[in-house]
Length: 192
Image (tube, rainbow, N blue to C red):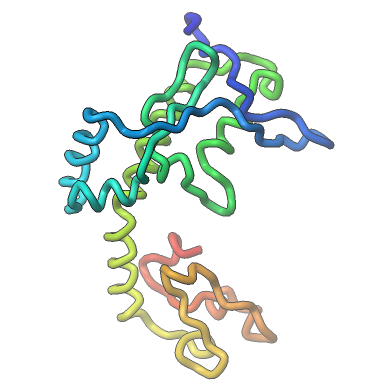
C-alpha cells in the first residue's frame, strides 16, 4: 500500500442519482477455509463456550477474501460476518460502498482500512455470541413486565428473537413509545 493512504477501492460503491451512494459488486473471492483458519475458529469457539462445529456453523461454511484494491485485501472474512445485516444493510459492504475515492474525493486512509479489520472482528464476536444473546433475551423476556395492551392481552404481540418485529402502533395506545414495545427491560436499547 502507498505510504499514508490505502489507495482506491475495488469498486464497492458509486454515486447514484441525486448524490445517493449506491453499492456495487466490488471484488471478493469466496473460498473454503484453510486448516489454520479452521484451527483459529476452533480456538475462538472455546471463548464463547461453543464447539468448533457450532462456531463453524455460525460463521458459515466458507470464507471470503475481500479486496480493497488490486494489491491489498482482507483475508478470511467468514461468510456469516460478510453476510451480516443490520437494518436491512450488509454492514461491511455498505461501509465500503461509502469509501470509494470518487465519493470521498480522496484515497482511503490506512486507519480507515484498519477499521474494516476491527469491524470484521466485532461482527464475528456478535455472530459467535448470538446463541448466548438469544438465550439471555429469552431469560430476561420471561421475567419482564408485560405492558397492558401489548403482551398476552387481546391483540397483543410477543417480541421474540425468532420474529424480531415490534407490534404495530394502533389507536391511542400507539402514541406511547412504551406501548409500542412489548417489554421494558435491560435489553430495550438492543431490541429497538
